[in-house]
Image (cartoon, rainbow, N blue to C red):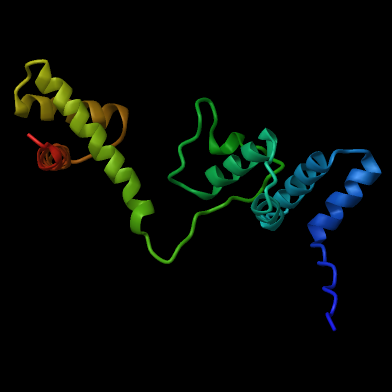
Length: 172
C-alpha cells in the first residue's frame, strides 16, 4: 500500500503572495516582488532567498533595494555617483552585511584589484618613457590624491609582485 504524499505546506510569504495576487489582481510575479519588498523593509531576507532559489526573477526595484541594503551594511561598498549613505531609500532601514567564518577571499578582493590597478598605472608610465622610480612616485601621488591614502612601499610592492606574476605566466 502506497501512502500518499501530503501536499507541501506553503511558507508564510508564499501564502501572503498568493493572497495579494488574488486581492489586488496582480500577477504572481508582481505579488512575489511586493512581498519581498515588504519583508526586506522589516529586515527579513527569507522571502527573497526562498523565491529566488525556487526560480523567481525579481524585478529591478527588488534588486535596487538589495543593493541599497548591501551598501548600508557593508562599509567597503562604494556608493554610485551622487548617492551617499545618508540619501539611501528610507523605506529600507536595515542593511545587509556579508558574513562568513573568515575574512579570506572577500577581504583580499579589494587588495588584489588595487594592486592590479597600481601595476597597470605604473606600466603605463614606464611605457611612456618614465623611469621605474619616477613611475612609482607619479602613481603614488595620483593614488593618494584620487583613490585614498597609501604607503609608497605599497605602490612599489604592488607593481613588483604583479610584474613577477606576469613574468611567471609568460610562456616566452
